[in-house]
Amino acid sequence: MNEADKNPEKPVVGVLSLQGAFREHEQALEKVGARPLKIRRRRQLEEVQALVIPGGDSTTIGKLMVGYHILGAVRHLGEQGMPIFGTCAGLVMLAMDTVDGEQSLLRLMDMRVRRNAFGRQVNSFETDLEMPALGEESFPGVFIRAPWIESAGDRVEVLASHEDHAVAARQGNLLATAFHPELTDDLRLHQLFMEMVTAGSR
Ligand code: GLN
Image (cartoon, rainbow, N blue to C red; front, side, top):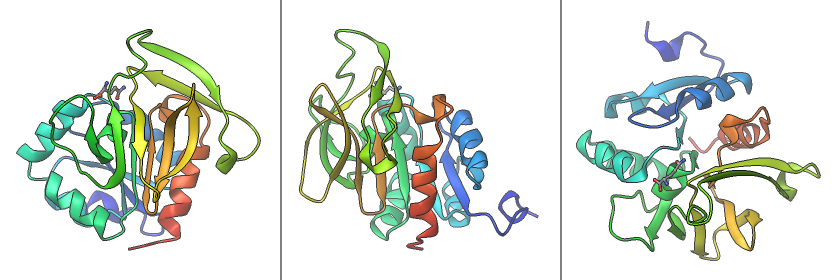
């Protein structure tokens, strides 16, 4: 029996686990009723209904995705409508390009990002974010060498901004945050993602 079969009634959500902060995402996904599955090989993508791309170092994650022949497969699944949630480096991976130079990206979301954008002043910080899509209560934004969205096309819905820079966005089946919801107790973004999963495009 493979891991994904243990709880057939729960949606299986892959967590790309090549590099970065994937364990906290697995825990958050369990709490919102998903069955997380670590993704390290392309074949494992066949078992999942959705995918989380965690924080870490986007250059490294991109290189590993190419090396493990996962990048093209994930891009294809995203284009087909599979829900993908990228946090921090994961947001960078979802972008079309960065202002910082060439790197391997999924190029799924119509946005350009700036890496380590807040980091010039301060490496990490926490701030309350207004996120109307989640309700009235603000969301605790944990930023660690975070990117921001430099510019975005019409298809991209900005969900939160900090100091006039977009830091969370959605485009159809794709969700991205510059901050780390998995490092907080607030599960609303993982819940929103699960709504996208159960609304089911696959
Ligand atoms: N600065 C990293 C990058 O651009 C992201 C940092 C993070 O994921 N916490 O790859």
